Amino acid sequence: MRWGRAACIGALAVWMGAAGAALPAPTEEDQAMANELQHLLTRSFALPQDVKLDPELRSAADALAAAHLERMKPQLLSWVQEERSVQAGADGKARSTDVFYAATARLLNELAYWHIEPGDAEYEAATLDAIRQSPSVCLTGQEALFVDYSSRILRLQAMPAARRQAALASEARLLERWGKPRQAALPWPKLPPQDAAMGAVVQLLDGGERPPLALPPALSSRLLSARAAYRELPRETRCAFQRWWLQVGLAKGQPAGDVLNAFRYGTLVSAAERLAPTLPPTPAASANGLPPYPPLAARYDVTGVTMVWRRFDASGKHLLASVIERQVDVRGIRGMRPIAFEDTFDALATDHAIQTAGSGRTPLALRMVWRLPPPADGKKP
Image 1 (cartoon, rainbow, N blue to C red):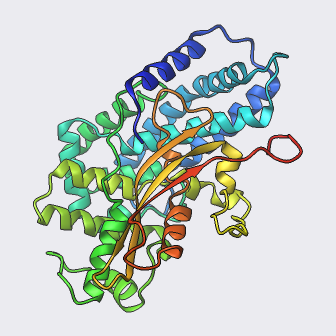
Image 2: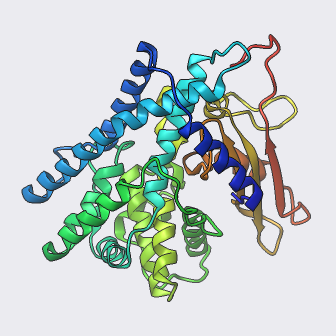
Image 3: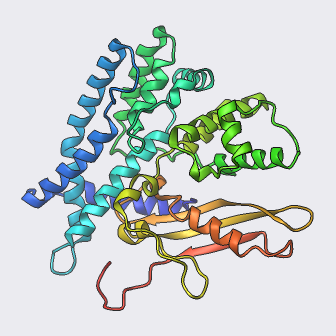
């Protein structure tokens, strides 16, 4: 997503103005919403018992998580109140479901921003070494959609014991940034890491160039023998695939910061993935052949534009479609990129690009605009 300077300043001014305004006393409904958000956040900061950690590290990590959860309680309530104030209509009222979904979007985006955000130089070097050297960093336990905290602590587990205290201190500093204006997050890689890695797999299947690092046997079985699609892989297997791709990038001499940023985007739990169990299925394509509007985007008021790049071989056969640019807006997220929602339209956009690819004469780039039309009865969805 690309923000113009004026848009950034304007959005930040709105956010700071709303946050700084005096808010009315919270209602019982406001507190109930904040409690629901707290429950969601608590799930993301749980350390499952099936995640193997040294007792001392688990104790320190639990204490850090508890302190963060306690600090966020008044923050979450203030977000609910702020959203109610921002969304109030001429009658001074706001639709409660809109308030709740906007505040939820804001929380999910904090989780995503935290996942992408780098720490200090020492922390970054230690994190890269842990991911590169230890397959166990992907063994995040049974809670597949709420691995935000456990995945980070597993990286600390993979570090030498002498480095863990400094890394925990860095984790604490990153958590203290929640809810505060901060610098723009690092951008998505030019090509999504899973698409780049799957492109290498396609080359292997076609007898083309081999990467400098062989696929581990388990990945080779799934991707080369069974020819599984990336979306079909379990989360821990996808993490292992991203970890392999990180090692390939390092072997090719790519900058450490770039490969670590790609790994973070590749292992991000987006809003679309995290909320999938709570959403109705995506409807079939419309009669005019256009892709449907995803239920997530309808519920959370997500709009925007995706640019898809299509690749063809010399004979004009379609090979791959990847999203190369996203411009997304989400109700409730102001003054920062909506990272958690930026891939909301990716799967539908790439599927549509593949389905409409004819021959090599088909345009390589496809721009798709996502706008939810107003319902026929005039009521909000």
